[in-house]
Picture 1 (spheres, protein in one colour):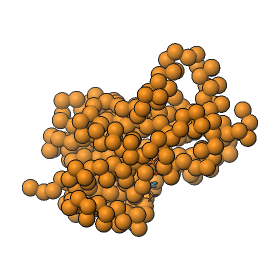
Picture 2: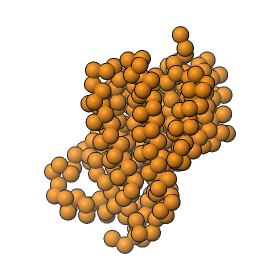
Picture 3: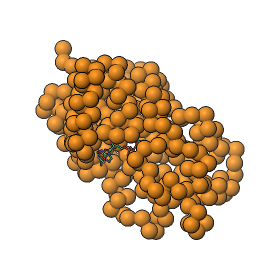
Length: 263
Ligand SMILES: NC(=O)c1ccc[n+]([C@@H]2O[C@H](COP(=O)([O-])OP(=O)(O)OC[C@H]3O[C@@H](n4cnc5c(N)ncnc54)[C@H](OP(=O)(O)O)[C@@H]3O)[C@@H](O)[C@H]2O)c1
């Protein structure tokens, strides 16, 4: 019987690395994907020596059009069997939509949406044959309440929640679960200085990536549906239900603004 692996994208740092650490400690074999070979190699050496598991690493840019497909073909060529998939890699662009860089935004769409749809579709074919599998997609608190200045990023994360929830329903009874992890602000390299400088980050302090990873691992292994990380974030995610749209957008615009940014 071939060895089973959990594939984690964006596993060199942040939430992805913390999930890899927790899963390796639980003796799961892992495939780690990111762009930085140096960070991946360091993660492999550390996690293998600490836990005695098999860690495969793949240096891939998933923001390119064929990145996710070529990753899948390399996995197949090496006969690696993925029975769980965590689509975690993601990037964010913050700023006035009129000023932000189009190329950067198109790459973000490819990474946050294109690579998720591609890896999910390809890995799912194999999971369906095995009649078992778990897929977890990392969305965001902003999936529920799109923020100004995160205009395209918020939309990518709304896509991920919508995609994951409907796919989970299609797969009901198949033995394959699709779950969605929805963190609020997390203290990782994802956040630029401009993001740290917003009112939102003062009002809702970023939490530790290891804490988010614990929720993520539990959701992947045992969960169904979606998990909003933390009571504060759960409360915030429900505000649009009881707040008039125009007032809600005004509050969000203020929260996403920097002190120097025009309102
Ligand atoms: N941090 C937050 O406040 C927050 C809040 C809500 C949701 N999230 C979501 O959580 C997920 C993980 O974010 P994080 O906070 O852990 O960010 P992070 O610390 O910046 O880590 C991102 C990971 O993705 C990899 N990555 C980035 N671009 C890539 C590309 N083009 N191809 C392949 N891998 C790539 C990075 O490695 P390389 O740079 O080596 O490629 C790294 O391993 C993302 O989907 C993000 O949208 C984050």
